[in-house]
Image 1 (cartoon, chains in turn red, blue):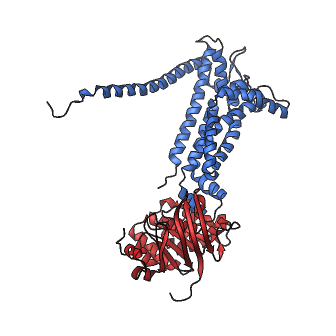
Image 2 (cartoon, rainbow over the protein chains, first blue to last red):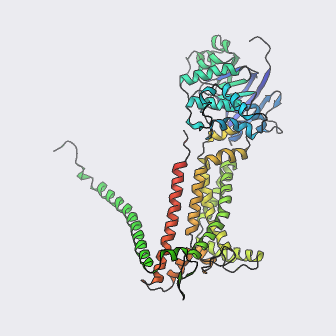
Length: 253
Length: 299
């Protein structure tokens, strides 16, 4: 972890308000390329809100206002000339609960590339994405089945495959395992290690073991404020802040 | 003596229960009675007129000699109204619903929804007058051959009349699609239109179809506006600029006249009403069936 990291995403003094009430207060955070960054913290600390601002998913919530800059490779994502649709092509997302479309497995994965007119052999693209999401072996003989017939864990891996089929640079994951059983969770964690080779991942989790197992960097938030950010090993073993120590050792609150 | 009080003391509760049962019973009895009377009189009608003459005859002339009892002209009149009003109400109603559920801000929604409800609350006789005094002159301005009473004018106002229902039911159907599906689609780089047209609409299809069927069913049964604006000419035609008569308008015409009960003319009312009832019942059952069978199940 000592090689030089390049920053792909960066928040600079970001404030996000819901109907005037600040959910995120002055967060400055770098996201390094091809690393896994975990954002941890108690419920309601603003970690999901911050994550959603990274690919402009808060645009759909009427009451949200935002200040500060979010830079993607040096460009402000919120500059007036930036098309949010374009931003989401590069920065994909996996949600808290699996949300497959009520379509076949194949069409779920092919949907994004199709509407965006991505070039190349679609069958190949679907197969590659499903393989990367470690789902191919389970579904290769029933690609035309409805995605809604898959188990919860399979559905979530399908949603990861769906995001991967777009070949984004960054994948945002909002507590992707919170609705899953431990076996499915372990599979997705294994998957994260493999995806790190090619993708930058930002994962929000309230599961500290998960954060310490999978991530390279960890950010700890509380009440909308970024309390501590650093190397995961350092944050979990030698936290600089007392609040962080209390939280990661479970003596919180 | 038991340690618990007996329920005899709760006679108020008992009476209320009986009262509510009675109220529920009235509606059941009414429905059964209506169906029974329709069936008996319709049976009487078919003692004198053959089923095939009724269903396939091309002339409807129950009041003048020589008499003829072919329902097709009335069916054609009703169909003209249904098709015409559907052309107005279904696309505009659906578009309105898509706007309300996918594009409109909370603010715009809070203005448009009540306006739609007002539109739905206008008495149908007002729509009939509106057709006669406003829509018809406009159509006649465009097509000179248009008759004073014509199907097109009535169809347009019936369309406007059912539009709020279509919009409201389709809006419900679209909003029942979970927000998480929209977010999933947006996160894959979809535009609002792609999300609406390719994710939300297909997922809400059963509800939308049911809304359409109910709208058609309402247009079939609509009476006042078509009586006022479409005319009273049982005319087997597909030209919307001509005067026609619908099944409902015929029933109004004969009910208002001085037809003695027990005559064959009197019985035509029940034959036409039975057919009308059968068609709308079928449509409503279809809507129900579609809603239940094809409703997407979300977690």
